[in-house]
Length: 134
Image (cartoon, rainbow, N blue to C red; front, top):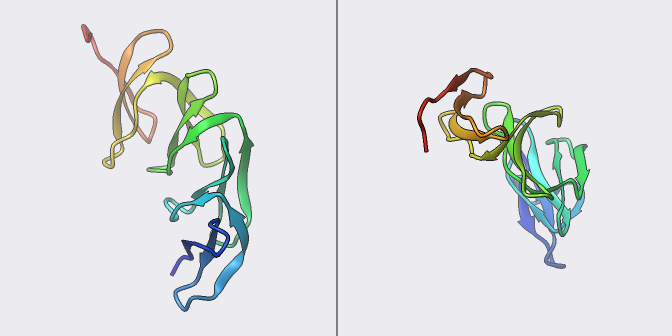
């Protein structure tokens, strides 16, 4: 079983095994469960990243994003500090930028790209352009 986040005595979050023991040394402002093999963590205000079940920090984005979401089908929704949105892959690389959109649990989303086009896309990268969408 994967470690789960829990509030500690100092109102910060750590990860714990099912038996209640600390899974690894960690002290975060906020922590989430693992999705797609990574858990999003918040080091401090607007300082986000992802951690592996081993406790290794997979990504430390600093203040690059104001919001990061959980991975779903290999992609995670992010909000940049200048009100742009986008999706990153598990390597932390930007797959594409959009104006709006968040992936559904089914792995499909409708999104408006920076150039104004509306598209549907899947986590596998298939883009279908929508015509005449307001």
